[in-house]
Length: 86
Image (cartoon, rainbow, N blue to C red; front, side, top):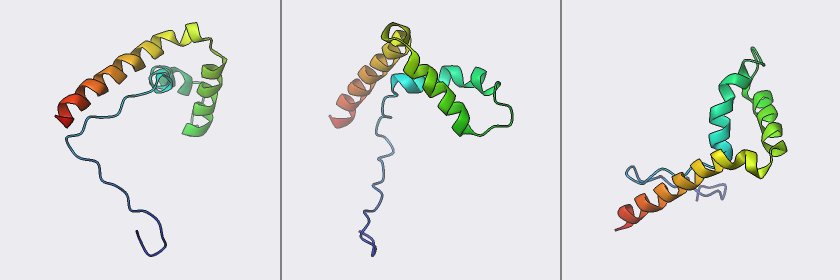
């Protein structure tokens, strides 16, 4: 702890596997380039807010492709952690 009582940042091991991405992050990565064209000269905030609104308006069936990507990434992370911890 530092003098102000805050915890110090824990350093990540350089060979540890990367954490899995969520379905929303996969959606964000796929939609961001097209949506950012609608907001010329804008910062990240309004663009992300717009994408978030569309994500929340989607049905579970519409979210399925990104959910499947997230599930496969989660499985990849579990496999890599098994190897890393062994």
